[in-house]
Image 1 (spheres, rainbow, N blue to C red):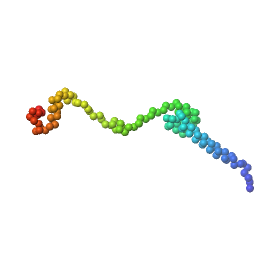
Image 2: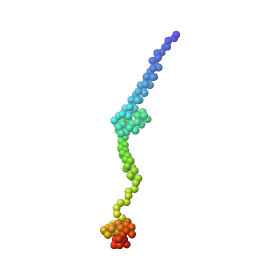
Image 3: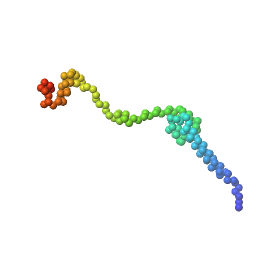
Image 4: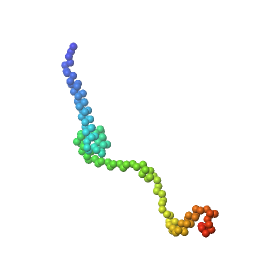
Length: 125
């Protein structure tokens, strides 16, 4: 039987290089996603890590230069519903402000009383 003239080591080298490349890439992605500059800019960090080939130093510079988005205001369901409701008209109408005497108030109250229940001296004209 013929013995192989070349050792099997050259076949293992490409596999080892591939594993090393995969590990290095994973470390680069993890470093970008977890660096201090990524705090508050997670979406940009994810894009830089997964969709570019920038190294950690370049990604940190880009993340540091990018502004942090303003925090979203918390959603209050009651406040959101109240913005859909019109405000009621409150206050005294102008015509009632002019007749704000005690006698005018008595006449307004007596307007709700049936006419057959009123005494002669309290009748509304």
